[in-house]
Amino acid sequence: MNRRDFLKSSVVGAGALALPGMALVSCGGGDKLVPLKAEGEYYLPTLPDKAADGRELKVGLVGCGGRGSGAIQDMLSAANGITVVALGDVFEDRLSGTKKMLAEKYNQVVADGNCFIGFDAYKQVIDAGVDVVLLCTPPAFRPEQFKYATEKSVHSFLEKPVAVDSEGFRSVVATARQATAKGLSVVTGTQRHHQRPYLASLQKIMEGTIGEIRGGNVYWNQNQLWYRTKQQGWSDMEWMIRDWVNWTWLSGDEIIEQHVHNIDVFMWMTGLKPLKATGVGSRQRRVTGDGYDNFSIDFEFENGIHLHSMCRQIDGCSNYVGEIINGTKGVWYNNGDEPYITDLAGNEIWRYDKAGAEVEFAQMNPYVLEHVNLVNCIRSNTPLNQAEECANSTMAGIMGRDAAYTGATVSWEEASAKTHGFMPELVMADMDMTRFSVPVPGTGK
Image (cartoon, rainbow, N blue to C red; front, side, top):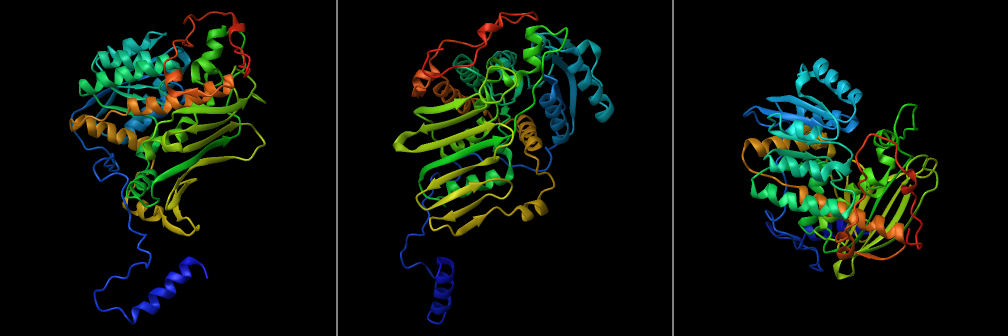
């Protein structure tokens, strides 16, 4: 007899003996939940389908590629009273494509004088009188751009990840604290923090449904991402930026650029930070760049808790994206829109009510909802700052990457204190490409 059938039979039998109003409880008394955090000690945003109306917000976009053009559309879908006043990119074709899309699809006409090209275009966008800037360039540029926006007292949306090396991590943490001191709102592109199934899961975990955290597994295994082969007339620098996800100095490698989402979920839902990392990785079939296409990392947290992190971008392999968190009372599973919790015997005890949520809410897209929350926080003058939290998740990815690249066990203190940055000289020209080599563990290279 399984546990569910046993409990059902027990309730039927006990019903004849129960007095009116008497509560039926388990004989063991072990079902009482002990919250990990009290309500109010963790952040659950209020997420209406659209931001409340309020003062007009002037918005600038830096980085007009696929993610940037998507982010500005998400912002326009999230709220009324949004005016796009400035655009910036290093490539004219990228900027003109986004400019045309905004005019034709949203009747948002950006003046030619507020369209800027070049590595310093972010300064011109931020200086164009914007209230909010969306920073959606390759992540290598995020720390400096965020720093400038904060110096100018501009609210920011930072696409994830927020850095590619420890220098960038330290810069973002310092800037995040300055933004808090100024009362600025900063939302990051770790959109699971604004995804309704994840927020419901966070609440159940904080309520103690799975008990104390004992470990977990996180995965992002998929086919190879896009790449660009070098075209005639492109300099080395132009090629690398157009092919940015495949170059470590620009993207941080896949464990940071993409898999940061899953690592972030574990750190966010548990409130834990890794102490050290040991791992492996390799380059099997990636076509361009200098990064790996698979990582497997063992993160050790305080109290002996371990997280297994795995990511892969190789065609023809089994694919899976999701997270598992183990507790002393149960296990939380997520592999889509309906996360669920089982007890230790494998019986399902909670599942996200997707159908019910879709009746209650029209807007389920977390890419839109993160901008709903950003606009609401700005208009209500209740600042939200996610930059340091995202920086910590990014740093965990950096630590795992460095462990795989070197073959060494890497501590948080060691990884976060490194002074070596990845940024080359920013000139649209050919370069000494021998400096961009694939790391070989155990060799010191």
